[in-house]
Image (cartoon, rainbow, N blue to C red; front, side, top):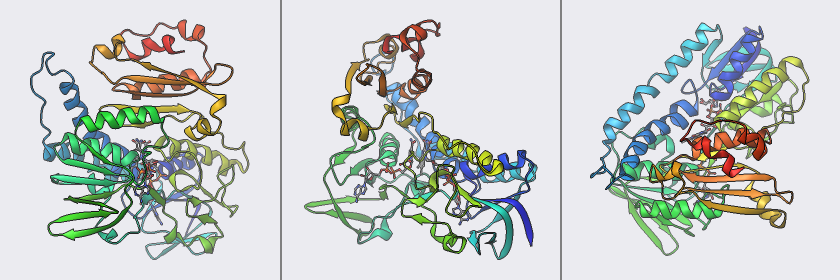
Length: 442
Ligand SMILES: Cc1cc2nc3c(=O)[nH]c(=O)nc-3n(C[C@H](O)[C@H](O)[C@H](O)COP(=O)(O)OP(=O)(O)OC[C@H]3O[C@@H](n4cnc5c(N)ncnc54)[C@H](O)[C@@H]3O)c2cc1C
Ligand SMILES: NC(=O)c1ccc[n+]([C@@H]2O[C@H](COP(=O)([O-])OP(=O)(O)OC[C@H]3O[C@@H](n4cnc5c(N)ncnc54)[C@H](O)[C@@H]3O)[C@@H](O)[C@H]2O)c1
């Protein structure tokens, strides 16, 4: 039987980063992956989505300049854009494997199943280790409705050879917004069906409403307060049925969240507790079994499920597992972005906290469209909202603009370092750029 110091389960951003970390610490390490090496982010998540989004960004930059030197909005050729995406994704599993091999981290392909707290099976082989790290991520949730087998997922969308004429998304979170923008820009008729009237509920309502208005003007159809009851196959199309609602479409994407990959692991045999949100861990990312830790999307934790969060936890857990005991994990500020031609980005105290203690906070919304940074790119929807506490300290910021993804990272540094206006004003930022506006916000 092959024996290791540590076995990592899952080769996504969490597991892969941790495996290298253990190796650098001089441990004998193995990693088990049941599907594509590299995990969700580079194969069927962030990275392929952003490759497709780059086509949208190029198109939308021209469309905001119509009448200002440009006459025509360019069409997106889906097949070519997909080939561009594949030029990256096709190499991810092989490159991931090569990297692990070069680092002398043993790889096993197969669904990992615990035998007990020190032994695991992968592809009929039993492996043993002193410690395990579970980093098995999440998969798309499937709505429990009639015809749920007809639902497709973000994974299917990101691999579409040909774009259907009509696409409907059920759910109005990150995935629906981002993929809807891509499909709409590439020429599909796009519908987003949501069960209440509050899409993207982790983001500021005022700016979400602005984003919805912008996307409606771009041609995306929103249907709020629709409880989807069933999906029917109406060859060759699909009929989505809700109360007093029917919609014909060519593809239905379920985008109602993601669920942790825990079932196949036989966690009960290893004494690892979990619930429907994921694996339970303490503040050292240790599970209910002392020798088994977990990190990344599979955790039952409230931190957003994002690639940089998975990487942060991986770095932490390598130290925690090696040292036996370290300080509790302490998360820095975590910025989040909904990508699109208009990007919605936020940082700081959660919308839930702001709503629950509304009296403690006050805010200011600034229309940035006439600021030179945004005027020069004709970004007419550019807005920033700053939320302050009773001491007038900034506690949360939401921005909506073509440059929000850049701006939020500068604001992350300013907020993390608790920089005052005077401190920000000491720096000379390159002009004109989103950074050169910083001292006017802070
Ligand atoms: C469409 C989409 C877009 C996204 N966009 C962004 C974005 O723009 N920015 C961002 O920060 N995040 C984004 N995310 C989230 C990001 O992809 C995840 O947060 C990140 O991949 C989590 O990493 P992980 O290693 O925890 O899990 P994963 O990347 O999911 O990796 C887990 C791995 O474990 C494997 N596995 C599962 N069970 C077993 C088992 N029993 N045995 C062996 N292996 C197993 C899986 O096959 C998988 O490869 C996006 C996600 C999706 C779906
Ligand atoms: N840009 C990014 O960072 C990015 C992009 C994509 C995905 N992600 C990650 O992937 C996760 C999953 O994304 P997601 O969009 O699937 O989940 P999500 O949790 O962001 O959104 C799911 C949405 O579906 C709605 N919903 C739930 N049940 C419904 C029903 N029966 N009918 C209609 N709507 C329903 C919810 O109210 C919610 O708005 C995200 O939370 C995030 O962690 C991140």
